[in-house]
Image 1 (tube, rainbow, N blue to C red):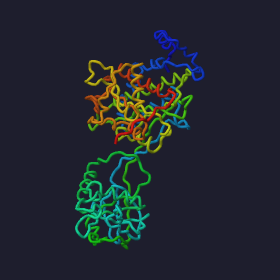
Image 2 (tube, rainbow, N blue to C red; image 1 turned 135 degrees about the horizontal axis):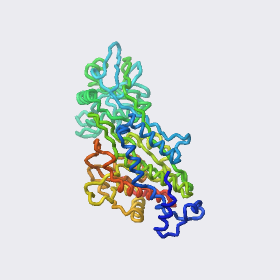
Image 3 (spheres, one colour; image 1 turned 180 degrees about the vertical axis):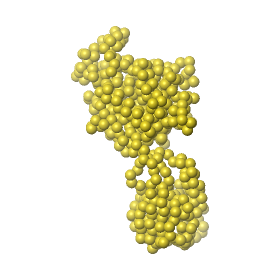
Image 4 (spheres, rainbow, N blue to C red; image 1 turned 90 degrees about the vertical axis):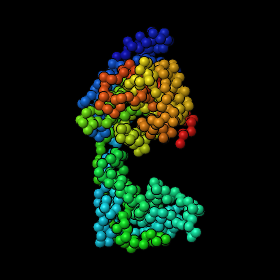
Length: 522
């Protein structure tokens, strides 16, 4: 812990203010005293940022890849620091860890027995999702369409059943398409979306599984299946305990044996064919965690300002070189530790925030924003409805070539996407305390980098929570072994970290919560 008494005294003299000393500021709520946050911002220093980062982005942490030993060391380091600071865990049981169940998907394995014939996955049929079950019959549901007064499900109860459907759509006697009413095919014949639309509809009807015959596209699915099997390119994802109905694509041999008249069949009905599906998951389970700590607000403890960064990076490359991730996102991680310590110093001095401050270190950002997605979509430790704002920090330690002559800047993304009020607050706070150049280049809707969608704040924004994403730009060492602590500009990292602290301080201590006053763009 820092010793801040002399810093505070010096700052008060230098600022020539009438602020009370920390010892006198023990009951600011009742005394209605306005505290100058610079008293605590000065505890965020280059020295301690550097000390943290030279450990956090060292070779010992092996690039902090999600689920790997290096990421576990990162988690342990963060826990230890929050405990040392006396910043409590967010969970009532005192556990800083939020388990994030992840899997590295692999193609499922297994077979289907229809009658006395065994069919093998990858040869006779394709599927990308496990499905198991025994069925006495198959429900034939034609094209599997329901649209504009037409339904292949009319009179059918498919709940818990296995259904068979085919591609295409119904045609009138004059050759026009029934759904569109003219010579144009409907969305049900869209090459990219037709299968997914049918599966979604079948799931809504309660079907247990969907056998799908699409001779025109089977070859395309087969090529994709073979590509995944050979390259192992499936992306890590959040583990789903219960799968909805799976889609099984049938090859020609299998459909001819099960229902040879499928092309001509116009009416739904029952196929008295016993069938057993034994397709099991082959996924690799990945153990990973978010870290969540909190400083409770003294006036509005059930309103939350979430400060976030991702704790993971991309690990070791194929040549054995460690990607240390000092900037990405070691810089955001250590900034959070320093910001947390500043808030804790304020709280210990009787000047804690009105609203609660949540320190959320998320895993799996490099795998697709998985840790933040799990927090917002599966298990928000604190209600999203009570989450006032998210300040997300991702790469704030380097100097963009654009600013090589003056590093006193930061890129802001998303501050005006949902709340003009947040944007104006951010500008005012910067003018008052930090005087950084706020660059909105990457905030442009037409920016080809689309950074607004590429870091953890987006999972809050999609839930209508105002956000600011702090960023200093990419560089030649982005996702390379050269992203090391010696290349960080610690003066700039200090200035940016302090700005984020000031902004969080203002959001947490203002009378009213930030208003959502902008309609999200589609």
